[in-house]
Image (cartoon, rainbow, N blue to C red; front, side, top):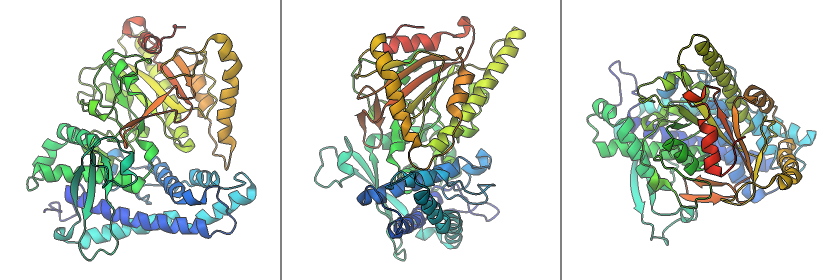
Length: 524
């Protein structure tokens, strides 16, 4: 197995090296997570609301901490894609790590979460634990082991398919998965002291990865690594993805995706639909299909048959499956005019199914505001010169109802799955109370400052926003790609449509019309 470039340096993109590196990363990150849990449990000043769930809560908080660091990666996409992106290091972060979101997430799990004493103790614990140094050391250890190891002792993956009807042999987490499962285990050399547990994804997700790999990377990977047959190349790439998201990151909420039927509906109307906050497992790959909100037809991973680009946090593992890199570095005009990304030059429909993370929302929506301002400015210049639009882009935002977004459009309230919005009288009596109650969540615990709701509303004005719907109860369904199931009522949800101001001849009313037909509402 060749693992070096012509100059003798490690070939960081080699499938075998990538997987072995991911196993080493997982083992060291697991040790850091265990130490962090012990530090929390040993703190005499912190009392947790659900101590029996602290392992899961701390693991998810650390996963979000990693995402906050990745969002601040100052390297170019090419550099990020050619080197490991999981452990934050000085090479990645020019201004050090960002710990505010971690402080908030831990505080929310504590009794008396917002008191200065509790917050001070959490800050002290995190500073003393020094995640930055631990990650720097872990990254150096992984690199040292890679440089000294022979490829003959690299860890390798093995695949086991668990049939849908096979229930008795499933673990507790596997029983939550609908349908067959792809279980990926790690064959490790005997000298490795700590084992790497298997990770599982739905078999449909595994097949989705294979579809994407064949489309985006099979040819170049095959030419670059001819000694590896296709089956081994793909298994190594897919196993690396599974271990990154389900082993290292371990925040299952990231594998939720917004209403697929709406995306298919917009796709069928002529948009090129792309997700900006995704992973190779949950990115939109659906077929165009006209639909409606009151259509209860089931949909799942089995229906995703169209390889599609997307943005994601980890270009080093995800680029082989269609990732264009971070949404924070995504250039709308370049993507619109790219013969690879948008060969038919369709109008772009970019979705932001945003994470449950105040820090990332601030960064993502601040970039969106800047992109909207640039789009409006370039459109104005094109109109003055009587030129066609330099690019056409509309947006769909799907976010938990935590923020009070003062959009300049009447909000529609949906309370039953597939049902119409409430009448005006019913809306007026309950809308303000719902928004106030839900947004109060952001005032709990240690607060992270944010400004994007007001900035976004101001930039959108009346010219951009074409839909604003609030969904409570079980009225909004998310699809969980890691369990292959629809999940109704995950949280109250707000869906916003933003249409780039342009002439009707250029599709200026298209998104508003499509939202009205999908949700059964009247256009404003």
